[in-house]
Image (cartoon, rainbow, N blue to C red; front, top):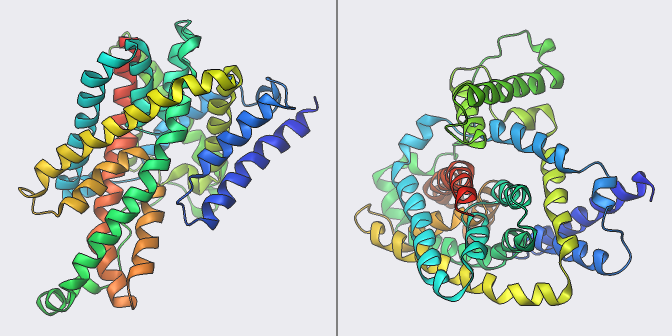
Length: 391
């Protein structure tokens, strides 16, 4: 098959998923639609190797993981993490609740290895799903590969509408006290600050700060992370080291904020990872999919119940409504940019004017962004690295 036709089909499936998600205001996850298209194509007219033919093979996936994990370290400053420490605690405790309930209860009903393979994508996103797929392949456990992929595709179907409903409820609660809050603190309704932004000056003249320059720096940080792993005999999983080195390089001013977005390649790398992960669905038959979907749904429901119990327990001591606390915990299911898009859409739909919108964003957006960063960008990588050793 022509490699040009292969890349066309891969990008067409991703494009259709994005458009459906956009038209449904993110209530229908793009990854769900894209995954369905991949499955149908594998079961009908496309060869099993068409993703590899489009150059999205295992080696490219490893490059994507290394560069994107370093990039994730540039998405938010440590200052913002410390400022929203309550949201971080609630989000991380929610992840702990998910792991505890799915491991304890799931172990009684399902195979241990299948539970271990499915949980990391439930507490994270694309990167953790990719890590589990590569880990399962490395250990020859190909029979379980469909589990992390299906989990990654399915959990957002439950997470998106529930989170949107919680944010709408929280918005109405906040607006019921809007007049009093505005009188007490006028700064609450000023234009919302981008909590994901840290201003740093480039060390080279503006004209020299090209895409190649930024990508080279990210690759250099990834290389240093690999060398550190070799020197320490991989005491820490290299994927965790990528993330830590990305955070340090960002805080020291070596890497710009959202560096790969500025370089214009973050979406391409993400599409490559999506294509690689969904290529694993080529081994799934209709009967095989039906045999695991029940387990996936049960684990999702258990995980969300664990999130609710953990976040509810902390909501009152931390002075947060249970709706906001639960929404923060649920960011583990999708992370950035879905948390940003969803919060912004809810504020737009509920607010009657710009003042109300800014008030809602100032109260909800920082918590959602920091919660998603703490879970998806940090905790999920660590969890996936630990769970690979439990297989």
